[in-house]
Image (cartoon, rainbow, N blue to C red; front, side, top):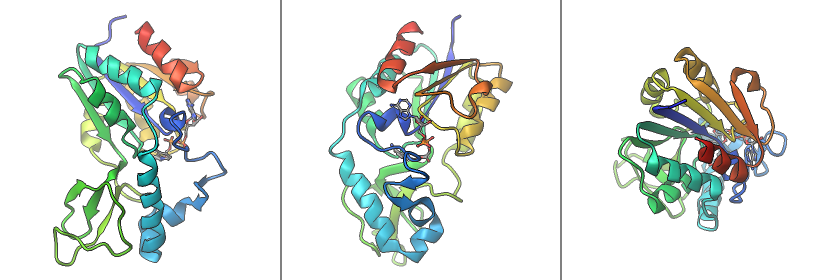
Length: 236
Ligand code: NAD
């Protein structure tokens, strides 16, 4: 079957083999921390030093990891794809970005970080987002507003994911939807497969093992992303 409009959703599993730990690997803890403590606005208000330090460590760790064969296979696909290709990632790392920088994509390609990016910071007063590759201090003053502080440009639980209108519009007209390395436990991303089904798209899940929502997909491809994704892309 020829596909024209592709939407791919990725989660922490696509970066796991690069050495970026997934979310739920250890009973709901993220790198030893409760999710509420490091990934909610309330956690940030209660202990800004802890939260800034948590993301400072994740940001520093990025410099030590590289895109893997799954990121590169998707970048190769984006370079060759003759149609619309929206890559939506829940990941806040920059491994997709780096893979696509090595292999520039065709004109119909777009990458959206729906949960924000570690290498960016946001002013709490003006909302201005800027590149930020160093550490953030607990009460980091904003260069954009006299009363603003800079916080990680990360969508925390209870906050609205980014670019949802753009993503939903692409899902409504896609004919192939592929979900890679995501547990399907975090909404709204977990609901994307239903929107794709309403568009009568072919739906495929790629993961280490079937997820809770596996029955919503037409097909499942199971194995490590660095093997399963290149094989799937080669078959396309
Ligand atoms: P998750 O941790 O909930 O689930 C990871 C999924 O990946 C699981 O289903 C697991 O079976 C699968 N997986 C693990 N290793 C794999 C591999 N080698 N190959 C294929 N699949 C593999 O992650 P999620 O669903 O992305 O959850 C959501 C939240 O975690 C997001 O909000 C995201 O922002 C955040 N997060 C991001 C990163 C990152 O930026 N890399 C890392 C951890 C958490």
